[in-house]
Length: 149
Ligand SMILES: [Zn+2]
Ligand SMILES: [Zn+2]
Image 1 (tube, helix red, strand yellow):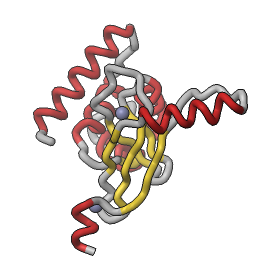
Image 2: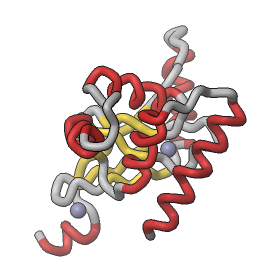
Image 3: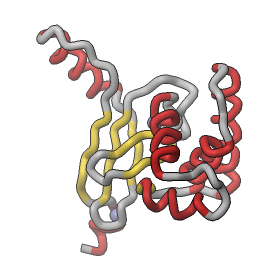
């Protein structure tokens, strides 16, 4: 994806947050832009390093809070298996996430989860469990890395 696309995504995300009445601090904005700029998941410490030079508020706890905020608003997803965050361009609609994570190049492609979510809802309902959030992480090799293997 081009740089222009990522700038657009960050700007559109800020508009959506503003419309929701969410408070957009400079740090939240910087974290959002940093995530949208990357085409790979970013670890929190990588973000601290990027941000500390220009944002005095970017102590690790503040960056974690900004990340939690963005995940809560659907602007980013947290990938537990990589302990990293990835910006999401489909933030207009609340959605679950399924990621195909390549262990060769760390690319994480987000794909629709509709069918998976239906099954999860069925399984959960049978147990009286209320689903709040679902992130499916599938680890393997992307087409490029598989070709090189
Ligand atoms: Zn998403
Ligand atoms: Zn790969």
